[in-house]
Image 1 (cartoon, each protein chain N blue to C red):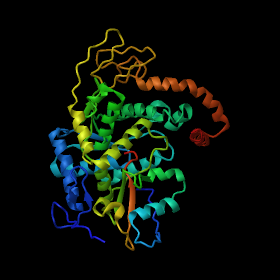
Image 2 (cartoon, each protein chain N blue to C red):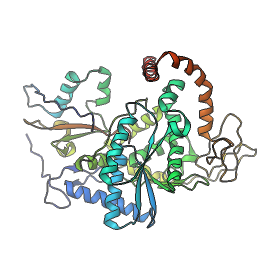
Image 3 (cartoon, rainbow over the protein chains, first blue to last red):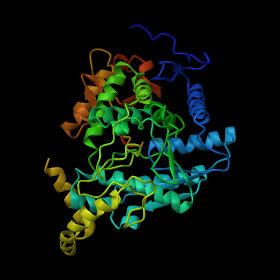
Image 4 (cartoon, rainbow over the protein chains, first blue to last red):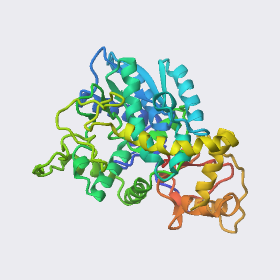
Amino acid sequence: MPSRTSNLCERCEASKAVMRRPKNLQKLCKECFFHVFETEVHLTIEKEKLFQPGETVAIGASGGKDSTVLASILKTLNERYNYGIHLVLLSIDEGIVGYRDDSLATVKRNQQQYEMPLEIVSYKDLYNWTMDEIVSCSGVKSSCTYCGVLRRQALDRGAMKLGISHVVTGHNADDMAETVLMNLLRGDTARLESSTNITTKSTGSPIKRSKPFKYCYQKEIVLYAHYKKLDYFSTECTYAPEAFRGTARVLMKNLESVRPSCILDIIYSGEHFKLKQRKKRPGPKTPALQDQETEIRSDGSVSLQNNGNRCERCGYLSTNRICKACLLLQGLELSRAKLSIAADAVPKVEEDQLQRRLQHLSF
Amino acid sequence: MHSVTVNECTVAAQEPPTIRDLMYHITETLLVDKKDFDVFVEDGTIRPGILVLINDTDWELEGEDEYVLQDGDVVAFTSTLHGG
C-alpha cells in the first residue's frame, strides 16, 4: 500500500494540511486556510471599496452556511482592519413551516454570538401571505418564482425600515458562476452583462447590494464554517428547488471536478462579456436594457423609461405601473377565495401539509 | 450541520475496505429511499458537490475513494449543494 506523500501545509510547512484549495490546488493547514481565506475576502472588499467608514451594513442572514460565515468574517475583518462599519443582521421570514422557523432560530443564536442587532421581516406582515399559503394556492412548481420576487423586495423594505442603504449577501463564486451559466444558456443577455457585478442597484433604488464572497468557493465556505465550528442551519428548502438552476449547478459541479478553477474562470469570462449595443425597438413596450429589474409583462403593463417610478399599489420602486410582487399577489388573491372555504373545514397547518403531500404525489 | 447522523459501522470485507466500499455500504444499509442513491453517488464515486472529510481532513488529500479505512476513522459527508 503506497503511503501518501507528505501532507504538510504548503504555506507554513509546519502543520499538517487539512484541505486543498479548489482555485489553485494548494494544500493548507487549518490556520493558514483561515488566514488566506479571510485575507482574500478583505482584499476583495478593499479593491472594490465596498464599505465606507461609519456606514451601517445589513447582512442578509438566512441562518445558512454562507450568510453565517459572512457575518462571522465581516465581524472579524471589521475589527481587524478597522472598516468602521456597523453590522446588522436582516432576516426574511418567508413563512415556511419546518424550514424557515428552524433557520431563524439559528439566526437568533448568531445574533447573540456575534452581538449584532437583528431585524426580521416577514412575508406575512409585508404581503399578508406566507410561502406555505402561496404554495398551497399556486403549487410547488412556481414557488421559487414567487419567493425570489418577494424576497428581493422584502430585503429592500427591511433595509429601508432600518434606514440602511447597503445590504450584503452571502452569494459565493459557485452561485455567481451558476448564474452566468444560466443566463448564457437561456440567452438572457440583458442579465448576463450585469450578473457578475459585485455591487448591484435597482434603478432609482436607494439600496445597493454587494457580494463580498463573489470569489469564494462554496467548498471553502463550508470548510470555514466547519473548522470554525460556526453555528449554521443546513437543510434544503421544503419546496422543490428551482429546476433550471439545479441543472446548471449539476453541470457546474461536474465541470469543477474535472477542472476546479473553472468556477473562477466562468466568473472571469462573465466579467469580460461586452455586449454589442442593441438598438432600442420602437413602441411603448421597449424594455429598458440598462435596468436589471425590468420585466416585460404580458398583461400590457407599460414599461416606463424614466427612473424612480413607483408602483401604484404599494409605492415600491418599479419600472412598470404595478410592481412584480403586486402582480404576483394580485394573481394569488384570485385563487385565495377557494382556499378560505376549505380552510373552514380543515385546520390551516394540516391543510398546508396535506396540500404539500398531494403535490409531491403528483410527480 | 443539523442532520448529521453518527453511525458506527462495521464494514466487513476480505480486502481492506476503502471509502468506495464505505460508500456502497452506506447506500445499501443506510439509505431509506432508493431514489436517494443518485443524490449520493455518481459514476461510481461520491457525487461532486458533496464534501468528504476523513478525520476532519479533506479527502482530496487522503486519496479520495482509494483511502483505506482504519479502525476509528471518522468520515463526514457534507452536501455543499443546499441553499445558503
